[in-house]
Image 1 (tube, rainbow, N blue to C red):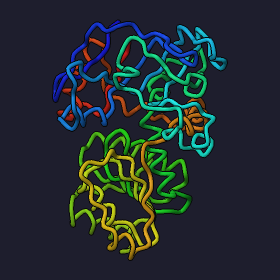
Image 2: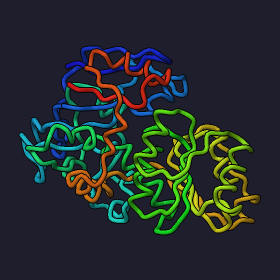
Image 3: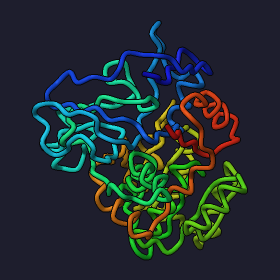
Image 4: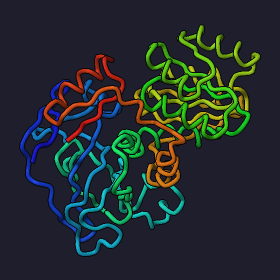
Length: 345
């Protein structure tokens, strides 16, 4: 079968690899119909990773059709149309029951040599009963993009909002205007935020943020951005910040704009981020939470909203490529010529 393999910075190739196959009775094989390129895929693309001689299978967001199931699988069967969260989990262990599926005792993450990546014609799904979420078999094709976001970016934006304690009447800032940040705007509005400040500088993304519910825009950076946010909030700062970038600069901005007693939900994969132990985190009584989003925990409620048309996160996709064109999709996202790329098989 064909799959995307990354061999080093900027080096993504579509190659023939061994067919995905069942190795455990709890596995299923899913034929991919739609996948995507994630902003976090750009970290290794830009050199923040190690690469073995065999390269890295890429992709962790997909929806597709079940082709085969292992002997112990009970909840899905061949022919089912399913969504695959970016982490697999049994959905029964103590951590899953607490809603932290990304720490499942029997789980792990897609996009590695052991499991394989989702930017491929098929993928092996460990812990299929706990991982896969059945989708309506006759779902409108117009919903496919939004359904695909539930496997990662919409769930991740929602996780940022939940861990930042977004609630009705709150003032919220979203740091980062990528796909996750834009989905964070959707989540903040969905949770009832009164004021939603999007912090970004790309006109097309800002327009989409406003469509999703952003009430204010801050395009400056550094101290100018901090002062602008303070001005928009009467000098107090925001109650909640959604950190959707992962750099030290973005975290320092978050720490500067959140008001005392506020919360930061961090979902940007951190790279060389320094969080001071005393000031301002301790002195301001801040809550800093977040991490890899337990997408499986959120999928049922978000799926309902997508099917009812309450939210439309699929609008973050602005380019569609074939599997053969995935290397071009990486280049487009790396060069900011695309916000988020869908891979249609």
